[in-house]
Image (cartoon, rainbow, N blue to C red):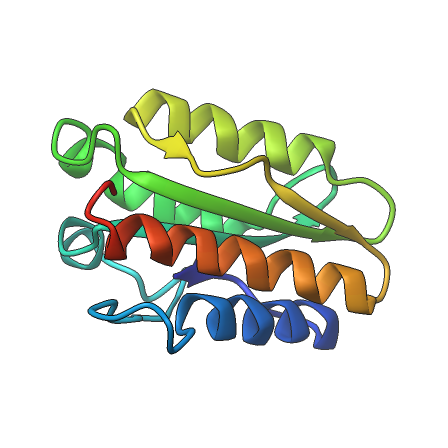
Length: 148
């Protein structure tokens, strides 16, 4: 999991997706959580799948998440084709630009989304937390089944 979590709302989402990824029903899935500014090429090369979490800042992904992609893009470009990924984006008014940017980079890297991005506007509600939990569980299930 690679995330930028600067607010209580994004923290709630991170915890929910982390619980979904780490669900006990999925055997053999090791969960590694990295802040976007600390995630490295080695982290991504060692991953079987990735969940990306970002706030939408001024219509775009967080600068920290952009830095992560700038760091890993070329070193991992040919290494992680068809890797499963999930995306969640939190915003106060609009998430479309952030989703479009991450999906464009993921497509360029050859990743495949396990489901459409989960977007949350405003304070996360119970349904939002369930949606990101499910996102995490679906990404983890890809790894557990060996299809990641």
